[in-house]
Image (tube, rainbow, N blue to C red; front, side):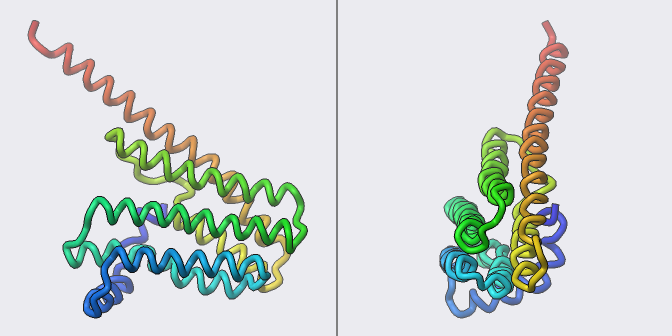
Length: 215
């Protein structure tokens, strides 16, 4: 939801930074790769070590500029299919690293309940499925816009739970993970329904068109 409605407000901050990066000679793809490497490093180093609040804050700062590379590509005219594929692939890797790091902390540091670990695994898997449905649906010609839990919501809830747990709020990660797990499962079915409705609408349009053709 936020990915649909939050781009215009964020552009006020993102565009000046994008212009500054372009002036110093950085390319959108370099920003994508560097941002991914730094974000992964923060997650897999700080979260397993128990530095939860620091991990949430620093990761949040980098994640907040997720639109930066795309904005740079648009402003510079360097938008490409490869760049879009690279960005989407790096997003999947970053999300996977974050929730793998959380799972590691739950299992080896926090000795968390099995149910919480299960919620983390559900979130990890379903987040990849949600993104795959969108990509496969768009490749099939569907318009896959919206969904209850998209990447912004996933990162806000995930990092929010990590940060609050780091501040001493009990069960913050568990609560955020279960919200994400349930919401992500709902979003999988929601996006399948979006694709199914469009398929049905396309078939009905094709049938009506065929009926109207002269014999």
